[in-house]
View 1 (cartoon, each protein chain N blue to C red):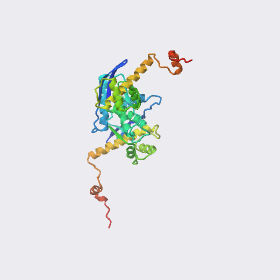
View 2 (cartoon, each protein chain N blue to C red):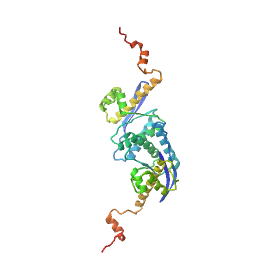
View 3 (cartoon, each protein chain N blue to C red):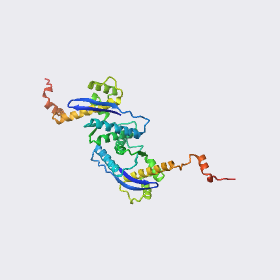
View 4 (cartoon, rainbow over the protein chains, first blue to last red):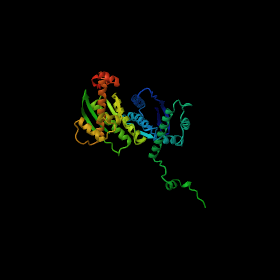
Length: 174
Length: 174
């Protein structure tokens, strides 16, 4: 399980913690769930985050792996919920779109873009950790656009409104 | 979500609580997860159970519904885990087998058998609650057989051993 904690203020963010929790295949399913729950509880206690975001896939290898993934997410969500931290989820497509502009980007493309955005070292040790960073930045971008909407700089809702708001952009042809 | 709390001692058990938690479809996914987590936490605080058992399906309508089910189970499991209560899961087949002797029994057959085993009223209001009762009894039977195995009354491991242990059951034909 990859995780990442970022501190964000207005348009900038900095990484407070980024790593993976290794889940030994020797341990049984419930011990692994306990590790996930414990780790998230520790992170929540240490960093007292305001928000919590996860990746929610829409496809899986099979229903059994999705049930297991759901449980792992469930214990993580519970750890956030007990501290009343709101949870947001993003599809992998939305995350890739948000970072690279392309919803079908591969892991390396995402990583290269993350490298430009952050000051992380050359090669990631685990892509799971950088995936978590991608979720965090996606949520950061998302929250920022929500804030800007709230503060009044609304985007135009259609061409008609756009023309009203931007009369200088009309080309007059005779 | 159906739930049931039983108190068991040796060969008898009694029902302490049996009901369903109605999860309004008006509420969003996270509010419903919160309701599940809160309810299980309340039950755990009220009854301080020693053990926790859930039904774990092997098939689902689709991967999305399995992810959601997994999350719901995850937040419930987390509520049990925070109190160090061991979690056991049973397949629907195993539960039906344990109650009726038939792994393919339908809901009504299971209910009729549960009625014989317990003193519950005629018609169940919600099958989800009686399903939870079935899981509890399945776990009770399972724990009991483990106990009896531990106390030495082992079942015969094969025909050879069975004959050794039960010589009176051999029919001699001349």
